[in-house]
Image (cartoon, rainbow, N blue to C red; front, side, top):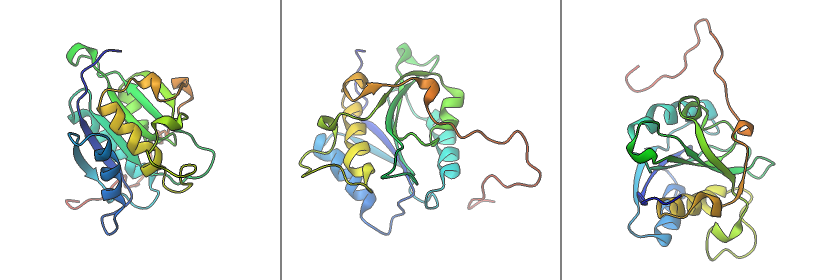
Length: 194
């Protein structure tokens, strides 16, 4: 698919800001393209809280222009059997049908986005040639955000074709976190403003 790269990447993580992890993600991506731009959606998601990540992505992703790459890392299954994915979703009605992009673990984190936008294509991130450059040995078992997801997000934002990044996966097989049909007295989210 021929497209003009946006160079824009949003970041959503449960890393917090007390450590260097968010800066490390940005450093890995900037090493691939110093012209990249970042928007920090939030790094204050509770540890491994997929539901909060799902919520924030669902609220924020529609506000960004076509071509934006959304990197999200809330990953209780890191080091396990879950796969990493990159997804092109259809921004129906947007300019020239240019997709939006999601990069992260296939654990339901992207469910709210996928409920509103159809998937154009998805790949499993199983091609190490597109992972972090300069790694000695395999990707870290506990920091796929740095070694796999950040480099892939940067390369998508710089114009690399989705099909280069991994093997195609059936969009119907992407993990979804479905909201309950109804709940009595359950708070979905509390924030600074109530």
